[in-house]
Amino acid sequence: MAAQFGRRLRRGATTTAVAAVAVAALSASQGPGAVLASDGGGGDQRTAGSAPSDDSVATGNSPYYTDLPPLVTPNKPGASTNLPITGTAESGIPASVLAAYKKAQQSIASSDAACRLPWQLLAAIGKVESGQARGGRVDANGTTFSPILGPVLNGQGFAMIKDTDNGAYDGDSTHDRAVGPMQFIPSTWATWGQDGNDDGRKDPNNIYDAALAAGHYLCAGSRDLSLAADLDRAVLSYNHSNEYLRTVRSWFDYYKRGTHEVPDGTGVVPPSLDGGTDPSPDPGTSPSPTAPAKPKPDPKPSKPGGGSSDPKPSTPPSTPPPKPSQMLADLENAGTGALTATAGDAFAERIKVRAENSLGGPLAKVSVTFTIAGDTDARFEGGKSAVTLTTGSDGTVTAPVLRAGETTGEFTVRAIATGRSLPAVAYTATVTARQADAIARTDDKALTAAPGAEFADAVEVKATYKGAIASGVAVTATMITDGDTPAENDKGPYFKDADGNTVRTLTELKTDADGTLRLPKIYADDTAGTYKLRLTTEGGATVVIELTVEAPAA
Image (tube, rainbow, N blue to C red; front, top):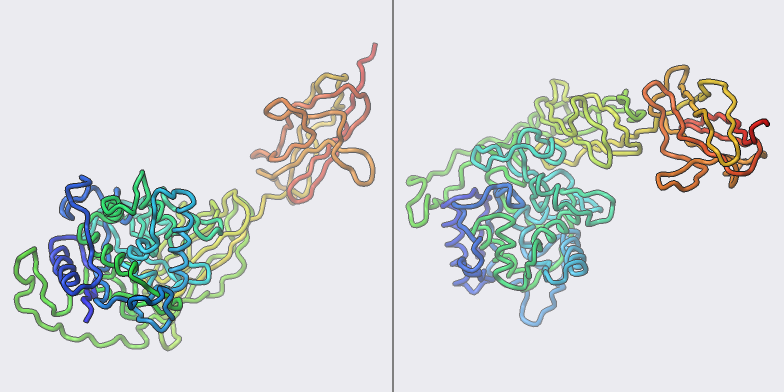
């Protein structure tokens, strides 16, 4: 039988003792044991009890799975490492997850070949941190169907790490939580986050992004991961615990002996007893990361060499399963319409979701987290990018007013049942540029200049939309030719760019708070004549202004 520890344990003497016994048993059975570098070699291999501050490690020293590999080698001597899907589930790695690890290895081999990062190390960490993204429950792009969140790091049984991301990644604006299949705390992700699947985003819940970020983190400095001491330092920098190092090392050696690909979603997920990164509590209940359930009646020592923490273990009474009317079965859109707004304005539509029980009826008191994702500066009322609310008696909950920023384009708002494994409800929101339907000069002075001189009077215009002031509207100014299809003129009046070069088109101009725009200075070349300046707003409003270049009267 394989030596398995189907629980996710906290830091401390208890887990160190359990893992030490398990690793000893593993080595004695000729399983894939863990060979550790000497503690005295690197100077930074401290015990769990003397770990550095939590914000100096990738995961914030959050809990992890302590399950050890099976004692049976996944590959027979001489067999191919590309075993068929019919291999054992425990040694298999879900297809997208395995592809992400190998892609990260190739990427880092190109950018930092001296590091010699093996994909099996990423696989070992991914197994210990999240059970390979909860057994490969990811979509076609490699993003987990719902966020993988560690416990709240509020100092109650775990480390104390105050919020560093305003809840953008973990949905918690008070404390941090480790996020994603590789369990980065938000402050570490802000530094090391990567775009591993080339979609233009850095998402800790995407296995390609997270695997590449983990690879860069492990390769920090001048580490050569083919050296045992450097590899140990890298793993300890990820989660500073010798127990963690031994567990990762055992899986690393196991995967080096061989593994195979299994379909996404069919991988083995280690059972969790304290609500860590696998938020899959019994249906209808809420996870309690700070109050772990009691372990099953396997007594365990309270300290190395000590006695049982429960001298009279007994099987806890069984809890009756929740009724179907209490079980959360689905989270769905509750009739939210199209989400569109002009830059700087509030979205008229409010995002609303409905929680349903197993009978299809409404379910109250379900915690729902709304999170803004994508390249946007849109925020919920109060400037938050993530908020957590609870459904009412009708099973619905409505997000706060969403306000557009100045960044135009599309972004996504996701609603998830906090701490549950249900798919997120995604909404696409669109921010359009501010518009004007009219633009005109603020005066009617003739605009003239002598050849080779500058125009004495500035050009000032005002933009409106439906008769109201149109502030912040983009305007393009172009010197144009005559004719039915005007083009940019190559002679006559011109502007100067920041380097003093001649330009005849200006972009990135915007009206101010009262809808007015004053153009930069305009210069005349040596060619006399009458020329045209066209100003066009976002929204299609246009005004054409005459500029005259002539010698002054004698």
